[in-house]
Amino acid sequence: MTKASEQQASVGVRSGTKWDVYCPEEDLNVIMLFPSKHAAAQAAAEHNAQFTPPHTAGAAVHTPSDEDPPHLTEAQREAFKKNAVALAEAEEQLRAAQQKAYARLKDVGIDGGSDGVFETCLSCGCPAYVETPHHPSAACRREHCGHSLANHRW
Image (cartoon, rainbow, N blue to C red; front, side, top):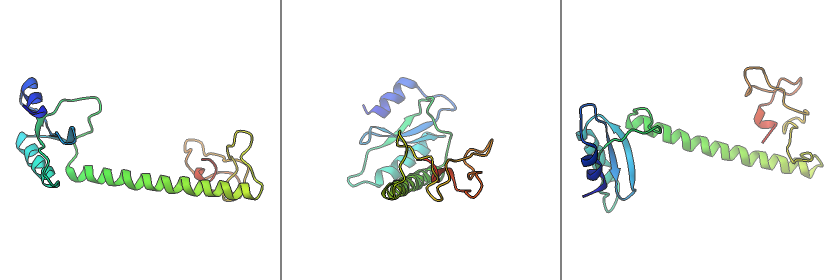
């Protein structure tokens, strides 16, 4: 008996039951919260067809948890996944640019202080970021600066 069928047998099916796609090869529910077993089975078939040799995913009764995402369509899930990847890449590029900026400043004799933390703006050298009340991610309010928080701290 597969893990999906064991789960199904132990939980029982009632009206309003949601379904997931459980993939034994990945040992997790790869797609969650379908309104019917048929819809989950179709999604499982699509999942399985993406692999050579094909995976053996199948419909499984959804077991709610505190970590459940809201019900999303496959297109919505894909959009969130792509957003997460793009934002992670942007954060990595920002960290790399900040590290280069710190190194550039150290090369010309500007250091990060006793704890190594730069408070100086990396773009203009103003002494410290001045935040806007109720909007901490706004541009620096210090006269002649106006750069973002990312220019001030790492």
